[in-house]
Image 1: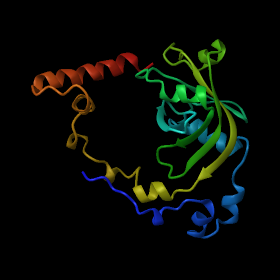
Image 2: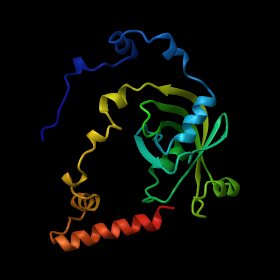
Image 3: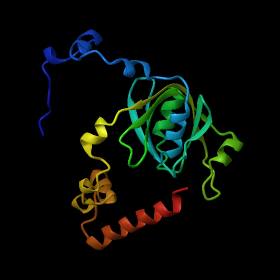
Image 4: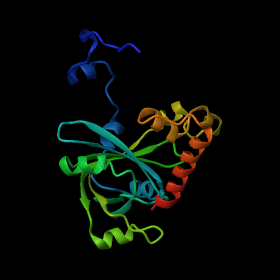
Length: 216
């Protein structure tokens, strides 16, 4: 596939030029940003089983990671503080390594069936305080660490993106079988997937067994 390149004269290179492309924002959008979790934000957090967390390293390289658990898995400690359990994963630790070097994070909270989202920006740290980790345990398994967020900005985000995408519409569900399994795609991208169907099925089954064993 040929690499796409943009003529530099069509690149928006400063904020003034950017804002000239758009109408001014309306009053509510300007005023809605809070510096603490009000009752509506707290209710949204308690209902959410899924978030995305955006981080950057010192060089500015960005990463976004999904986090999911039963609703309310992000613990509200006070109106300025949240705690996110770090459940078992692949141990790349991309998010955690970024936080250690650059604490600025952005969170996007989603609730199934809600077209609106909640956005929270703040500063994060990685903590191992035993009492906190115990309070985040599931099936008697506490996380090894938690991401502690000091909230700086909180605001609700409108429904347009979810309505455009029709994300929660059952009629928009795609057939997962139209793409290879995750394990096959990963092997295709790395060491090479086996051509033998039975061997590939075994690898898929092994991944499912690993899911069941290491969820918490």
